[in-house]
Length: 316
Image (cartoon, rainbow, N blue to C red):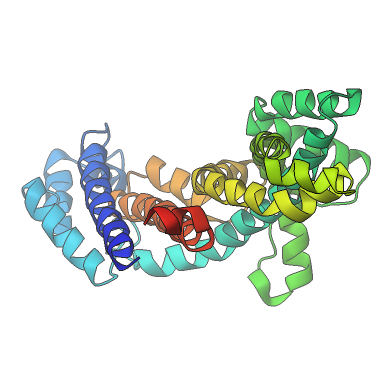
C-alpha cells in the first residue's frame, strides 16, 4: 500500500509539473498583449514597451516560468497583471462558489444515477428498464447549456420555484439563499453527469446479477431485488467510485460552463473575463488550480478504490 501511495503521489506531482508547463507556454502563444490592454488603444509603442518592461513581460519565457513556478511551490500564484491584487486571494473567493456547485452537482448526480441505474438493471427485460436506459442515453448527449436553458424555462420561468440567475452579494452569510441559487445550476450539471453515472451503474448491476453469489441468494429464497441490494450493491458502488474519478473532471468543467449561463461569481466566470483581458498571471493560476483539483480528486478516488476493494488488496 505504501508503494502504491508513493507511486500515485509521484504521478500527481509529475502531472502538475507537466500541466504547469503546458499552461504557461500555451498562453504565451495566444494573440493579444496585456500591456496594450493596460495602456489602452491610445498608448504609443514606447508606452506599451514601458508597461511590458514594468510587468517583466520582456524577460525570457523560461525566466518568467521559473519565477512563477517558484511562487506556486510556496502557494503564491502571483499578482494580477491588470489589477495588481493577489491571484490566490481572488481564486479563494471564487472557489467558495465553484466548489459547492461541483459538490452539489455530484450529490444530485449520484442520487439520480445510482438508484435509476439499479432499477434499469432489475427491469432490463421490461419496458420500464428500456425507457430509463434510452432516456439516459439521450440526456447524456445533450449539451449542458441546452439542459440549463430547459431547466430555466421549466423550473424558473414556468413553475417559478427557483431563481434563474445570480448569487447573493454577501456570499454565504445567508446559507439558505446561497444554496437556493446553486440548486438550478447543480441540477443542470447533474442531469448530464447523472445520466452517465446511470449507464455505468446499470452495466455494473447487470454484471452483478449474473454473478453466482447473487443467483445463489435468489435460489435460497431472496427476491432478485433483495439479492442484488444485499450482495451485489457493494460491487456496484465500487464500479461507481471508479467512474467518479473520470466524471469529477466533467463536473468541474461543467461548473465552469454553467457559471456563465447562471451568472454565478465563480472561477469559470472569472476565467472567461481574465482571458478577455489577457491577464496571463490570473489565467494561468486559475487553470493550474482547476487542473490540480481534478488531479487531486482523481488520485483520492484511486486511493479510496484501492482501500475498499478487496480484490485490489489481494492483487497487491
